[in-house]
Image 1 (cartoon, rainbow, N blue to C red):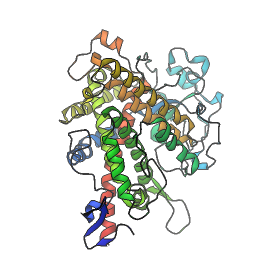
Image 2: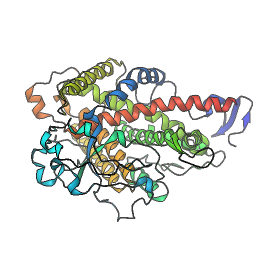
Image 3: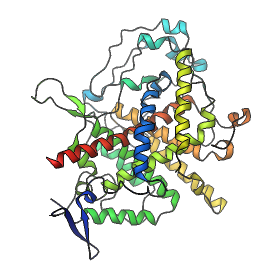
Image 4: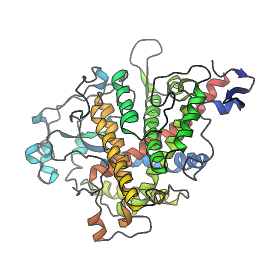
Length: 473
């Protein structure tokens, strides 16, 4: 086992200097203290703020009809390489409804205005078989939900999109109930899954100019003595990058971390006796494999810290968009629920705006205007590629949540760099609302993506306690 244990202290040599750490400082959580990189916020205050104030409100809000149903095209081809086959596991399977089983409002011939009517909903056939297996995507809508739909508002696209949004009028667009398809481990792994992250990091993500040993999402590895060195080299290389590129890298790393936390927290646990159905729950060994310094070339603790950074960026986007979002109707057709949703959103935004250490996006893209605009466009184009890579994910459930979370992050970036047309100190008038638009899918993905980050921070605290219990036995 590396590093060698010396009582409660651990010693190792870096660049000829002997460094000694306590047991607490060498585990997964050794960096989860003090300030978040490139921010003034302290992790300890963020833990308390999220777990006590944000997470409970978000958990309730995301079960509302407006945020549950996400319209998505899961059939778009991979634009970067030929189809290498889809996930053959039953856990990744999607049980599709035939055309005649869908309500008229879902059909291509009825896509005009992108509306649902009560009459259309009454024609819905309910004989689609529910897919409640490990990774299946359940596209059915319960009888209680049908009455909640009358129409979805359609918004114009803003010019500075960071994502190539799906065409709402495409015949391949389908509504998916996110609450029936929770993000969890599906068994999708191996070369196909790793190819996605390799492509993001190695080809489409801003990287340190100097190659770093073990850089990127490699499988668990950790030759003795090399883990910490790689982690330090990576951090030194990041410090040599401009702020904008560091922000981009840390956001992608934070997203990757969040997804890995979800897969560890909702891992498939076989039945104890080896028979019958298993359950989903926290897998401490899986979490440690993904984040322990020994198994991640020293990068795991920094990856966890990047989760907090990404959370702060999206938190700031919601704070900046508050004047816009507070005027939204969040319309589903159920007057009582819509009113509850509006009030719940306003309550959440009030709490978000009260957080004192907001991420400061005004520090980005400064200096020479021409160079700043060129860097911003490069930033936008690179994120476009990252979003498009989600169409290459073989597991449809993984693809669904990959698209939700990258689109939500892209929406956050769109808000942060929208200029002066919106912000916490502005008042949104009709002209501003005309100039800046968010489609319903952007709003749904924005809140759900932030919800995933919030859940991850909550789950990190759960794993912290479970690992303490494990180590004490």
